[in-house]
Image (cartoon, rainbow, N blue to C red; front, top):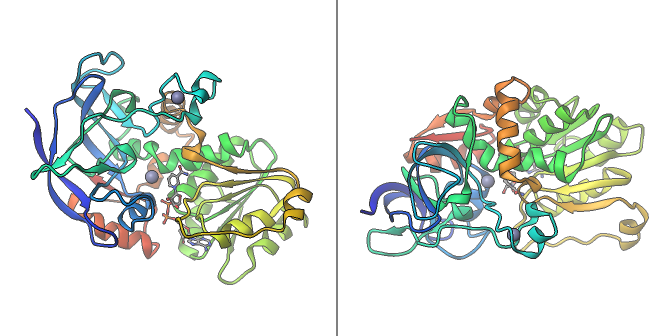
Length: 361
Ligand SMILES: NC(=O)c1ccc[n+]([C@@H]2O[C@H](COP(=O)([O-])OP(=O)(O)OC[C@H]3O[C@@H](n4cnc5c(N)ncnc54)[C@H](O)[C@@H]3O)[C@@H](O)[C@H]2O)c1
Ligand SMILES: [Zn+2]
Ligand SMILES: [Zn+2]
């Protein structure tokens, strides 16, 4: 029997989200139904609501989730009913050109559930990042369920499913931050602070946090920033250079994703340094860069999709580091709320009052 549960949808561009009844089908082959315990509020959910990702409204929002598998379809062998899982949006296929070349973190054909979740009138919903977890239950491909140590609180575990993994991976996987590096992170929300914590864990010795908000900069220090720059009052490019012997940082991470912050990142890195774009731009955004500088400054301009992570490798690793007290996963949870608190959580995010609001079910 399909279940009817409460879920948070974005019905139309820029309209406030709504809490409605959502029909979740029984799992078909290779699918699983997960009883969601907690789901973090990520800036990407706001991008969906604002029509900045696609026009496939209505969206079932929420994608940073942990929960318990409550039903599995035919052919599911890797997870079973009762397993505590973090949902991922990279269930690798194993067969595409990236997977076949041994680079599954670029998988170009990731799996999602085949059946749609719907409104009660049958309208199909587009689940955010193929997950849709601001809901009591969600239907996913079984490969989207990654088992982690159930000792981890669900509120923190869910964050591994998107923003924290993306930020950590932007520094450690995409940026290749290592011992002795200087790193600058522009934008210190959940994603940027995870990049800071990742850079600290990897051994970076200078970690410069850049934001427009002093409260965010103070928090960034608690995650490992050694210096902070408020780019409302100081030119971040000059400030980063001044803090790195006049050279610029080895790795600069743009965790905002706007033309202005990308140009700052481009200019704030050392010769042969790396720029990592992990913030998500919107379709209208353009940049112009002097091609001579693109050549002359050398190094690498890289984009980080989901922190170039492999969920099966990286979620259990971050869960273990968190349980050992070596990665401050639980500190990203600023507040918990209910399914009816999502729009309010978006507003708090916009006002800079939270790192992560987590919806608890
Ligand atoms: N690449 C990925 O796989 C991936 C995954 C998750 C999130 N994201 C993206 O990462 C970005 C950050 O997400 P978040 O959840 O941390 O958002 P957030 O809103 O919590 O944080 C953004 C931070 O950037 C700061 N900021 C805004 N404009 C700035 C500017 N011009 N200069 C300096 N700081 C500025 C804000 O004050 C805030 O602290 C979003 O674009 C989100 O969509 C990407
Ligand atoms: Zn693949
Ligand atoms: Zn996200």
